[in-house]
Length: 108
Image 1: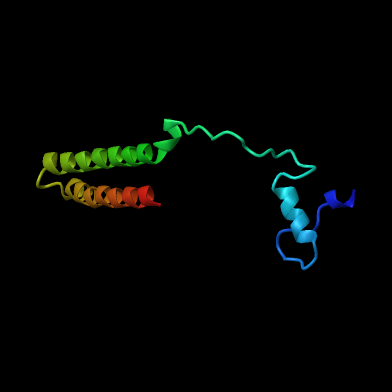
Image 2: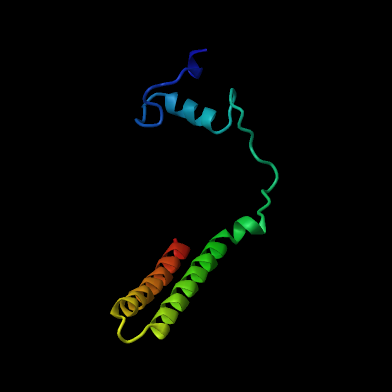
């Protein structure tokens, strides 16, 4: 049948005919589709549910490593070696920036 043929503007421009209702029926699992309506509730695994928190904790783990490395570099650098002190001082705000980035990613 010609109702199964792809329409070039399907889904982009609303039509005033019954074509829009027919497309909505087919897309909702009507005749001619393989989509079946779900009759049982979907089981939500804890692994999926806590994925955002796991990612947040991984980012905080990275922040802790960067901050510890920064403080270690600052502590054990000599007063004559300005380069290593500068590297440690620059690394500390980077770790703080990662903290705020992790919070921002966790909220969105």
